[in-house]
Length: 539
Image (cartoon, rainbow, N blue to C red):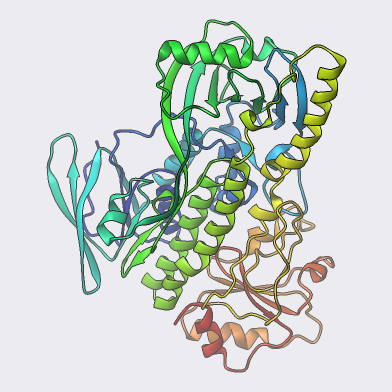
């Protein structure tokens, strides 16, 4: 295990999963020292998340590692991201969703990076390798948080090596709990999880099955949803030989062992192969959110403050976005260009996104394979065929929102944030499928490809960006830039020449934050630059 060499980091992060790593990378790119403490000896290899969505891969692009994740794909980038509903792998096809989650390679005007079907442990490996190249980031394993307290201007934490039982005191300016659903940090700050617990009992079974992909006629897909009476569930490849299986509608008193798992896989698929079960992981689906995300200098992120069913592929992606949002705000505070209101905006902004996504995930959870089953669905008769057609239409209508979600993953917005300036007009109702880019405050900045082949996002600055879409008779930006330098606020002026930019950014000026969300837009820059700029940074 690595020895802790910095006992006075700027930020102590508890948890080295995707959320903790995202925060560490964001801080490391801004030269903020951080110590990441992970209680396990290594990361796990349970299937967990498998969809890294377009927004998360845009953040990877922002860090310069989207290509590394692309190369690490176990199935290859050209593997089709189809989701097939069938009675069994050996049975009847009911419905299929092609290019689910927008994983198809190629340029899309709406985003800079497509989604990717890749196991969470591979995502973590790519993130960890990058984090370890950053000089101000240290990661230690087999070490846990024992206790923490706060004094004026610092957090004092006791950590323990689980192998030697040796304890050390860490003094940091901030502490972030990215330590999952059983968060020790959440316990330390007295936050509670409220909502609906125990929506269902579930199992993730990982198994090896060479030849399974060739043993059926349904073609390649990332998930096969089995709709049958005796073993409904979903199954999908993780790499060339390893698969995951998640039975649905499992009675709460069910106990799985090796033989039970193998028998269930055989029943569900209808294919008899020598399956080798590698692991079985029990988990409870719940809809829970923390009563608070922050206690002075201590914050919660990821599963430590929000939990929901995995259907829709939102969990890990939301947690990584938490890490980015909190990371740039902590860095701005430590570097003197962000204030306390900016830190407080973390919970204000992220909680509304968590609420939106949790509701989507719970809606998806209500319709699983066991709910779709009807007697006669597997009958090889005209009546059976008619029933399968009817069920397929029902699946298309009821499950589309789970696999066609661009309106959620790119269309969420921050309303009522204390560090944005709004135009006072109400937003349109959220649409889970149809994403319409908007340059209004709170929205993700509209994406565009530039004539040199780069993304507009590639040109945003590490601090605030002032995008000028109409440069005719424009004379205010030079003084605005001079003011930002005088006040120590990092600002980049961006004047794209492509004529289509004006359609996406119809007002002359748009201020974009480091997380690529719009903070303000207008046709004139206010005369008091200091007050104006400081508002966006909570100063």
